[in-house]
Every structure is written in C-alpha cells, then in structure tokens.
Length: 385
Image (cartoon, rainbow, N blue to C red; front, side, top):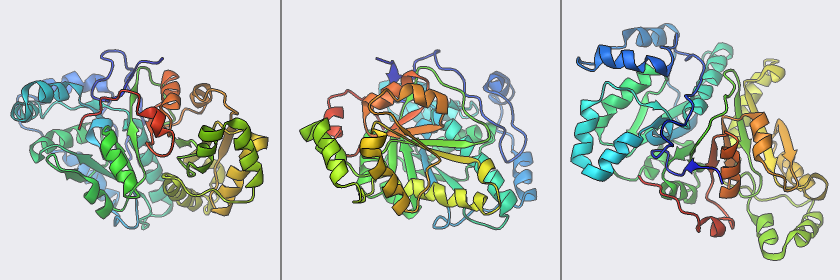
C-alpha cells in the first residue's frame, strides 16, 4: 500500500519532490523554492518589504476582481495550498498561544508548496489566457484562501503568496470557526481542504468539495494546460449504479445499466464543477482555440465501455457537457492511466483509487459521497483542522 499522508500537515518529511510550476501571470516568477534560504536571510530580521513591483504589474495589466457570482470560485484551505506540518506540530504539542507566537516570529519565512499548489498555478495560467481574449470579462477563476487561522497568521500567508507570485487577494480567516457559511456567500464552485469533516459539511450544503492528500512522490504536471480528471459514479454522477453493484454484484449491475441505457443518471457532487470548466472551455472554442485550449478534462472510470459506458456518455451529452477524454477501464487499476494523463487533480469517491493514484505520483482528492463511504469509514484518517 502506498505511503500517503492522510493529513497534508504530516507529509513524508524529506521525501516529496519540490513542485515545478510555471511563472505567475502577475509578472516574473521570484524563482524556485531553493531561494527560500536567501529570502529568510534577507528578510527574517527586518520588517517585510512592500511588494510594490508585483502590485504595479497588476495595475499595469488592468487586472480587476470579478464578482463572486460571475466567477468560477475555488476555495482552497491554507493547509492544502501550503505545507504547514511543522506549525501543526507546534499547535498540537504546545497549544494555540504558542502556535500564534511561533507564526508571528516566523512570518517572514514563506511556506513551501502543498498538494493544491500546482492546481492553483494552473488556474492562474488559464486566467492569463482568458484575459488576453476577453479583457473585460468576469468569467475567470477566482481563488479564495480559506483558513481556520487567526488573523495574526494572515501576515505570513500574505508574505508566502507574494513570495510565490500567486494572485490571491480574497482571504477567509475564521479563527477556528467553520467556513461553510462563508463558502456559500462566495458562491463557491469547489472547496479543497485537509479537513474531511468540513468537506462532508460542504457537500451536504450542495458545494462541490474534496479532501486533498500529499503523495510520497509527485509527477511533474503541465505548465500550460489545466488538466482535471474525474471518476464517474458518485463524483460526476449519483451513486445509483454503484449501489446496485455493491448490493447485487457485477452481473446485476450490467443488467441494470442495459435496462436503463436511455435513462439519465442523476447528478453527482462535482457535476457543477465540470459544468463550470466547460463554460470556460467554450470561451476558448468561440475564439477558434479548441485545439489549443488551456483546460482539458478527463473521465477515468472503472465502468466497461460496451456494457455500461454508453449510459454515462449519454448522460453527459444530455447535460450539454463535453469531456475531452474518456477512459473506461473495466476494473483495471487507475494509477497507470493517471500517470500518463498527469492531471493537476483527480477526484474519486473511493480511497482505494485515491491511494492507487497517489502511488503513481498523482495528486488525488477524495469526494466523501455515496455508498462507498461505508467502506471508507474503516480507514484511519487523521484529518485535523
């Protein structure tokens, strides 16, 4: 079984490759994480220097902030965007006051990238292309950093965001309170977190959400194209067919799918996110850039093509959704296929497949929805806040 941190703050120390990402759309990249030592030496003993150059580039580029209702809003926990395992140990061992003191003392030391970092950088790459084609459009990705931290920790988070040249201006620092109500106010299209309980709360409120993990090894991902891979049942679709399979076996499942071939599957928790991606893709298609679109989507399902795949494809077509590539694996392992795709993120409802993806270096996210969770509850996950 793959060694995988079920809590991104408990990453396998020293074993994870640093993430290679593209330069930011806001200006020249500051450089690789190897420059962190120089950053610390220059700034640790003094007050943070104002990042005037970065702000000036924003103004020159006429970058504006879209209204939440017009944007595709991605809410990301600070613990999946960055690696905070050391700070979490301070909190767990010494309590909140010592934790806050530690964060303030180290506020000029940027966090290293976490599992959601390549995904967020890819979102910014898409935004750059969208702004070139549609300078006044508010149909963009809008990233909101969500954290349970006290506002005092915000200074270190801002310094880290500026260090990595991320374009994140919207924060939600809840001081230990649940962020779910704020997610609804932001019109959130996707919420990524290390806290499995909060992910379940978000799903219960109709918000697409998933729990992220840091694998032991990482596969390099595209710097020019956002790649998102989805499982089918209990992710894009409801768990109706999966319930048949769990209760009555494979033969009954095939029979059920044949009998209901022309009956649409109900929507699953991430159908809306795929729909949002599709709307942005069509903006590129309208400019003749279908073959050079910076967003690519994948369906990676254990379904068989001939015996059960047609219902899935008919459902997507009836919804008006295009999937760029569809892989029907007929029960074969998903990890090797995902290794070839190299998605920035893969969504699945079963931990078995999440672990298989992580074993091949894919950053996978668990969608705790549907009948498969009765099996997943037996797995030990140490998901702290």
